[in-house]
Image (cartoon, one colour):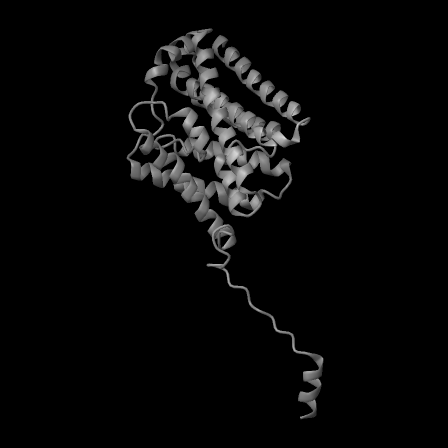
Length: 279
């Protein structure tokens, strides 16, 4: 249990950092895009520790799959509550841009902040593992440079897996984004946990380019371009397909509705009706 207690302390530290950073930025609304930095830092930092429990905890700390699934769900639920509108997901920022809900500069700044948060979370996690507070973290520290890639299939299978999972995720997100947070946040947390478990033998279904960058891009086995095809191009393709299926078009690219045709309604003037009756 000492390993789990250390992990819970680490999770709590990440949550406190994100919440404090969020409260601090309320005084500087111009830097609101940095909320994405805190959101990405918390998500990647905590998920790295979940990944550690999955890889090492089962035989070094006696932590089974039920523990990791529960921790992952609680992590995603807490992230949704603490970070609010800051998703930590470049795809969701790009989605707003494609829907004409955001302009170019804020979109670029938010995406850059997300990748910066992911990179710093990776460095923070490596420092935490280096402390070797438990046997689990000591083993993880030894394995850090030779980590296991989350991509366990071919590039084509990986691209297809991330694309389909992103398609499902964004269709659900588009359907519930206007709903109350009491419904939206738990539903998204359950969906992401489910997708992660279903695709654990393929790509882990991160459906988040900055999350994938922090969790698996530094692992050997594939090149940066190959990882980008699966974890960046795959989710973006799935997101654009979801937008087309949901709205019928992508507003930023073209206005014409490709799927849904609206019937035009013609109103006949009253004068014309009167003339028809006389005839």
